Image (cartoon, rainbow over all chains, first blue to last red; front, side):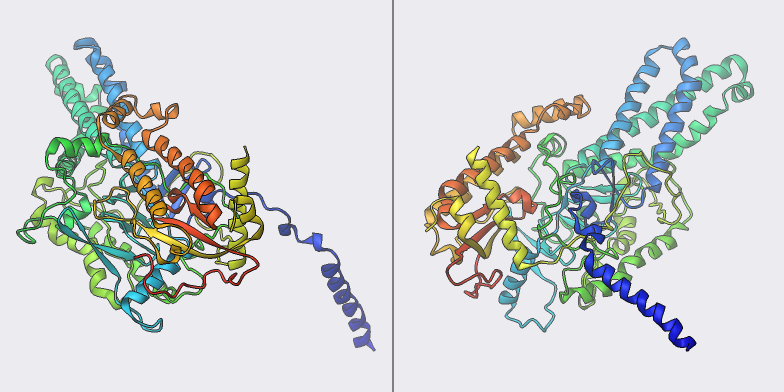
Length: 482
Length: 155
């Protein structure tokens, strides 16, 4: 009896629950028109966006804040403690020039860090399917058999260049493009991923990066020279120890500048060489165009003379961003599904399992970094990109392991570094693991920095394709009628 | 069969897509392959198609051309700490707009009446020129993605 008594109200609850669900379709608010999303919110790479998509950085930004803090503190101390003395004793032009340099350094730093380095958007499902079809036809293999790594050869200016197929982005990479495993994007004219700047350095921000390290070299030398001058001038009057008591900050500045000068000036020299020969760090480290590879090996992208190469790199046309971060996502546009684990999944394609297998490879990179971070030797404080990571590699499936070990920029770096980088003046790559880097404080409060974690309907649906094109045709009709 | 875009809208369904890949034989500058895809053989005359693609290639070359004007623009931008781009458009962007208008015009005049539609490459990350092929809704194929098994197509 008791049981029945208990059962009755329960059944009644169940009944009422069921009826609630079926009778009110309005209960589910998500069925209403959702607010339009911007494309950066659905971006599949591992980037962080701020200010509603205007600012784009890599995921690990801790080292960038370190760079910023070092520059601000050193310059601040210089202007506060050294400039008053120097402007009176020598000339007021000193703080003015210092100020100009300082502003230029910060401007180029922000420009490098916040802009799109030249990310190639991933292929739409249609394109990917079309490419797969063509590759299958070319290989003559059935879909069950896993084909070897896909490459295409193209002759550029008399040199044979291999174009590799990117399994993450589902495209054949253009020449000089490379996939950055930290940001999980293919970047055009990939130079390296710079943790000090918190972004990849590629086609669109290489000139800003170069301007940054060049102006930072000048700033560092400038501060170093004038702080020393200041200390010397004061010591003539007061004696050395009194000087140190009066301006203790100068000691800190000298120390920071001394260690920075070697790495930054060395890096500037290295990049000047790269620009004049029109090579990327990636190509230089791999020795792609080195004459050691063969007598006929030369750089097909070089314009022939140093002046043209420099002009092209620094003053050439600046292509616009291809990823349109602030555009709105068309709800029926086929988008690649954003990754849940840094891996893009296109429905349930065969490559999915290979992507899963490749995860441990991506995560092993920080492990390698840890081993090398414990290196003794010159630590470069405030030295941007002495910790440059020329990661040209990308997680290729296990069947092509030899490919991976060559592409993974970490291992060859260690070997090539010792022999080929005499012009880096013995700068050691000081690697900071992402874990070691200080966690970033709250960034600019420009809206919630959403990463890639939004999942939108991204599966290719033929019916929705239909409506997409009807929409675009409708759009064209509208435009033409205006 | 179709006389304008409105007819296309009302009675067409997407049958297939053809992709024209990039041509890298000239380096990293933007060029598209001009090879005539076999799927379009029955749809459009070859000279018209090749003319469109060649025109696009010319426009892209113009955008990326490194001459006196682009150097001047680059130096001026550097001198103003790139703030000048807040008020001015880069030459590249101007040419891209021109390309957008050209593609729209070509679509209206030539491609839509033949049941085709060209997508601006900038919307595909400058990787491909995507040409959508529409079929009459009344007729057979509304099987989108049914691959044209006619061998290696647009290579």
